Amino acid sequence: MSKEVSRRNFVRGAAMGAAAGAMMVGTSKTSWAGANDKVRVAIIGLRGRGRDHLKGLLGQKNVEVAAVCDIDEKQFGSYVKQLEKLGGKPKTYKDMRELFQDKDIDAVTVATPNHWHSLAAIWALQAGKHVYVEKPCSHNVFEGAKLVEAAQKYGKVVQHGSQIRSNPSMQEAIRLLNEGVIGEVYMARGLCYRWRDDIGKKADGPVPEGVDYNMWLGPAPERPFNPNRFHYNWHYMWDYGNGDIGNQGVHQMDVARWGLGVELPTKVSGMGRKLIFDDDKEVPNVITTAYDYPKAGKMGKMLVFEVRPWCTNDEQGAKVGVIFYGDKGYMVIDSYSHYKVYLGEKGEPGPENSQEGDHYGNFIECIRANDPSKVNAPIREGHLSSALCHLGLISVKLNRDLTYDEAKNEFTGDPEATAMLTRKYRDPFVVPENV
Image (tube, rainbow, N blue to C red; front, side, top):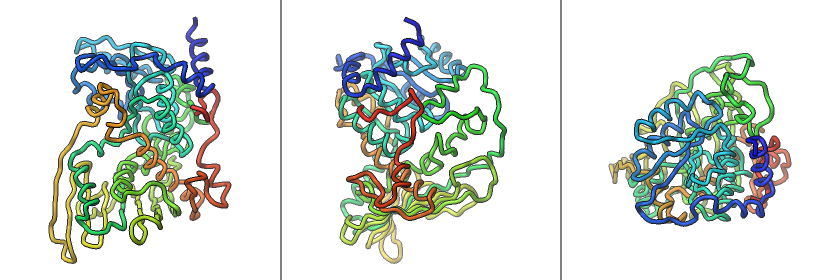
């Protein structure tokens, strides 16, 4: 069978939905042989977060990075050399569909651009693999919900890349909020003040040698290759990324929502513009979004999120973090692991802690236990936090306030906004209605 026929068969099977997906289950281990059995993992997407995946997985006992996958074959070299030094012989794939057919692979980690996250994870689940998927787990609300459905259907371990949830100090911070350390928590402010430089303007050009650009585009619309829409800068393009609110900010959005104890809002209000730099970025680089939860808590709760790209102050040490406000004080989370409480009118010091955990270790432990319920960052939580970013960006893009009906998954009286909860997928890279 040729590789091209093999790829077509895989896509056809995935698109057939539930029946075809059920046929794929069992192509890797469906139960675990014991604590000493090796877990064989493949990494999909070898730049940026993929390098962190490699580091995190190599720190686990009896785990083998058995394969690597990227649309750019130039990325294979450093991974292969490092793994061969450790005695491994990793397989290399440019097409993830071929990887998913490899029966020797137990789990995959997905570190692709955002527009691939949900589809790659769904295909992996349909092929019987456990999945670690980077944040945000989706490019839009629809596909994130479908990924949650797939995780529930196939019963595999799915860990979202919200590593803050594995840090013991952050678990402690949320527990203290729930216990009333700052009283009734009524508001959270997420801060994403990252130094993001001018990316300039670049003309379309030829596809670099060794790059499968069709596969890179995947679900996104056909466009000419442009180096400013490729490595990393795709974050700032509507077709592939979700701006900094969906890049760095989704971590802090997740913590804010976690601490407030809320899911999706009733009202969304967003404002944003491209300021400072006249460059190729499409997603605004200065954004403020607000989310209203009128039925939460005693008198309702609010979540406010700010993105700034350049010179700015910090807030009690936080530039990338979350501030929770209660009627007895406030809590500042100024990193991935540190929190500090300030009490009363004078801001007297309260509890404080900083302690990191092992998010990759939690993923591997859950695979060995064959227990998805033990993951620190369940995919449903990842979906909800990613969805908040998407809802806010829709309001920003349309420049108007929106009323969201979670039960119907629509914006009340606004079909234009509702249409933006999903996208038109490029065949054959289609997120299926029936997973």
